[in-house]
Length: 67
Image 1: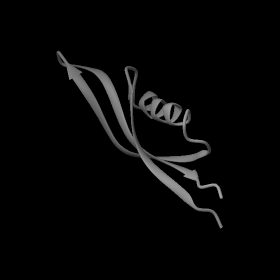
Image 2: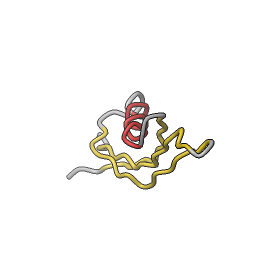
Image 3: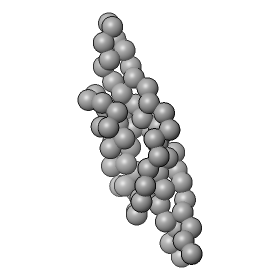
């Protein structure tokens, strides 16, 4: 039987929400091995002068706990 740990992350992008999710996972993967899935919790955007200029994604990432 497997046990998984879940961590919450926030990624940022200047190109969209998909980029923000990818940013969060790519950065977490530098210190967390074996991420197996991600749940998108919340999406927000920064607006400047009436235009969206930045995107953020709050995600929960799961990885298997090793014995």
